[in-house]
Length: 304
Image (cartoon, rainbow, N blue to C red; front, top):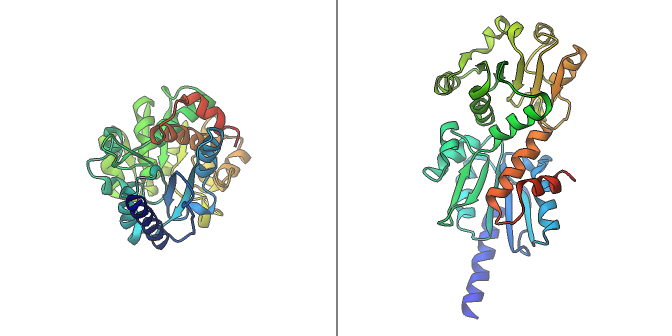
């Protein structure tokens, strides 16, 4: 009885700590276990909780995924708190913390995520410690291939080399005919060398757009506070071939300003909705001890 009482005290102190570290309100007290999507503002409509919670419900599990809005100065304290809470299963990392969390994890990171330098997925390893990997790249390439086929003969341009951009670039660069990464920071230049891609600054992209077969937006331009903006202007979109494809990994809104302008130019488009679903399926399988196959998880999440 004394041990049970102490366990309850520990549980509520962890919950209280978490609620003091995050900016939105959550309640996980009645759950057997829980997962989270951690970012600056995932409570503003992140889709992962809906996807994961659909599977939890159909599996009759008293589990839930919750959004955790956290400021950067409290992020590491939150991660330490979650690592110490055995009911925390893991979950998703979203913008802008994918690289920061990779750094916090240290050695507890997959080789793939180590190469990318960013994580979007947390789960418990065999030592019951939080461990990170990255499912963005695999999900983005599968999403594209399912819609448009192979990129083997394609010239690719990727806008933005943050956490998501690095993951996407790592996968696309392996298969594409050529890959150009566009960023304003020298970290993008260094990463391009690492994966055998070409780096260009934003000021130079006009010279290369005419030769691009697939353009991917991996920036946050077009999302939330930047929803009215586009990473490319109308003249730049007009310089793309009408046989090209624009893939914006943003899924809220479903049609960003970039995609709307592309459609007006009769350019094929793809948003990030299917990519988001694919990465959630992969992440769920990492974090949850389940007999469900990937296909079964995908089928359930597709109902959302």
